[in-house]
Image (tube, rainbow, N blue to C red; front, side):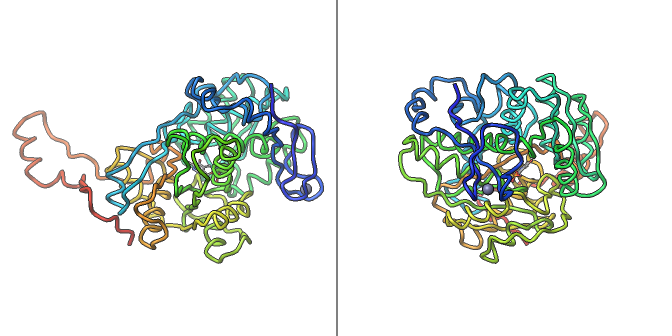
Length: 425
Ligand SMILES: *Cc1c(COP(=O)(O)O)cnc(C)c1O
Ligand SMILES: [Zn+2]
């Protein structure tokens, strides 16, 4: 049973039946799924949701599949963790981490979007799937395509981290590195999608794919006992996740599933080396000026973000703000999260942590309000972003161990005590 009526243009409202589509044929704006919310509100209650297994399919009436999912069945349902030690370091008193660095199967939030997109490709009976990726999407499309028995064509910028390339090729995907940046890769994928009968998850499957990200917001609200937090800090690449988290919260409100109105302020985070969305927000504008990315946060390195205009829009509409941080601040953010909370995140998570610190310093986030930060990817994929001292080598003798611990050499592993304020400069 599906609650999807069709597809609708976000700008001109033109309606289309369910099908592969990159955007509106009249005005080229993105297409949105047109749901029958009245029917959903009769079917989807808190009790129904609670009775289901822990995965993103708990909210399946709000996802655009017509049949039961065959892959990605265990995706979503990641932990929401209270983070008192990180909070103390940042100068906050009510902080939670939504930890998608442990999402199934490829350890990033992209497992939510591909769970929907690859199942949709099966429903459309497509011969193959593909994507343009900054890394994590490549991993996730390749894994779920393998599980679905579909060939995958994955196009990436040539300068991607080696671990993200290996973690794509391992699934038997056809991986092609393109000389140029993500925006060049994406343009090529649009041309390929026009010519071949394949589903590119973030091109012609995009209206379906994006819906998977809403579950990040549903889960936060359910895990907070059906309340929307005061603030959410989200890393932005194409700007889709931040808009879909907000859409998800608004849908729960509309369906009467929340305790109170959504007053959540959405905060966007980028690297200074690729900041087209934060730049627009800081100019109080929705006009995105494309940039050439130059940052260690490769997973966020999209210079011409497809949903940048909408991301800047919901940031300002919700009363939030956006900031960006340098590569040094990103590495420091990764280490701070690891040392305070025992969570090893990738560069995008370093961006989120460091930007949160900056927003608090600027007084843009009230330290007493409930704040959730989105940790969206796993640090084991970007080991080069944090170069740490190699451990000292000793012979297996107690005397040598005691000499080393007395020598001060071990203090390279610094312990950041709770209560100190994170310094960004
Ligand atoms: C893709 C990605 C994002 C941002 O996603 P958009 O929806 O493109 O803004 C954030 N974090 C990680 C780890 C990602 O891989
Ligand atoms: Zn249109």
